[in-house]
Image (cartoon, rainbow over all chains, first blue to last red; front, side, top):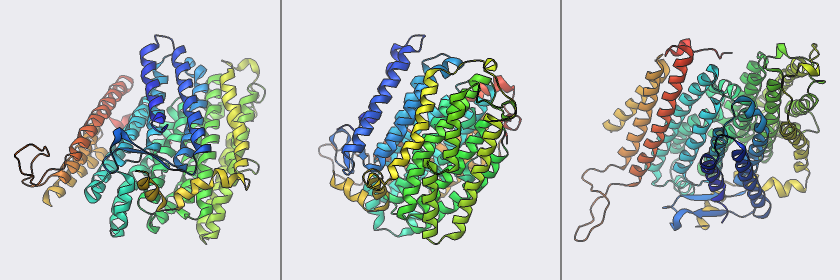
Length: 494
Length: 112
């Protein structure tokens, strides 16, 4: 069974890094990149060879419902691939970027713990175990946000930690009530018990979980921490937080609980639609007013999470397809854009768009890849962002939700507006920046990770070609849309 | 029933503290109170009146037993809360070094 290794490898790497690396960070870099590469290889192997099967790993040989079980299905494999790709690219990017801040192995140890937590949340099939892994991921996220040791970073980390612990308490109360009602912590048995109970009970439980996990996913009434935390963190960590952390701890858990465990009652679909639309519109307006490029991107993350939630809220095939694909494409292009801001910050020492200008001569790779990322997030045709937004809007029209569709189209037009601002002032402005104004050159590793993700922005569109789509994305959609499939496959695998 | 209501009141005390207090340390304590009430919920759900600890020994009749699982869960969550509180206090110390104040309304360089 390879399932536990998704947790073991990064955890072991984190401890080995603290043990063997002395004052330098060479060993830490080698170990963390090796660990992340092997996790990526394992995830790709699971995805392409074991896609239609469901594997259940019971810890220490106990049987369900007494054990803590790990579950691997198409959805979790998909999430694991997204996480490992972004994490590997962030590690390659951070080699020179972090040396430019503080040279230390601690960054890599914390990074590996962050990956451990996220992988654990994805593979676990036990509600309390999910809570524990979530706390591991959040711990390292707090520490990594304050890694630069500036006053603003401590402030952002403190706000993030307070919000995080409030939401964790809500989730813990939710877990306690779920346990007292169903006498089980395994998600599949909880789902089986809840099917026979009145649906009002799931509304109460769902309310607690929606508030708790919605805070992690930064839906609009709960979004206040995100712009501070994501814009203060070092650039590769911003890309990890915006790219995958809010998706694995927030969106993935919401989808897993509401679709697979609670059986997707119509009320929660409506709630996701409302919060999603609210996120799209409010965050887009807030993003237009920003002059700090990282803050602009952080607000844009909230608005793009709104698109994903709307897609899941519609709940038909096209909507889930669009949401899953937008989850993947947003992870790619938002990480790419955060790398760009990191490179600009390193080269020019500023994040203010008013002090930037025409960067095409000074930083050719950065400005070109940022153009690719911006076009993708705006939703221009050959890039992946176009298809995901198209599917979500088509799903809304098919479900006859014309007003929501109108608002979502409005939201994507606002996205174009603030990314035109991003490009016009940040990378193609009037003040020409010459090569000799660059303080520190962009290293090969940073160029590589930016280029790789820019290529992925185009390449992932291939996944939607009929024939490839049936093989690659449809199993993931089946896991979400088939409400009872999760219960049956987990319980039969015991 | 009363005891659950009191426990919920404790949770609300924590929420009130987080929302209204201006002192960093008081905010940290309030998050702690929220965590305690969550733990108390877990323990209360496991409690049965007149039940014994669930350890079987020879010559003893099996009567009503207390559910042992929530106690294990609470131990785990207490450890997690210890970590969170230590982290928050460390951040508060660093914030005091940088801003020379514990007042959250004066710690606002990030805005907009």
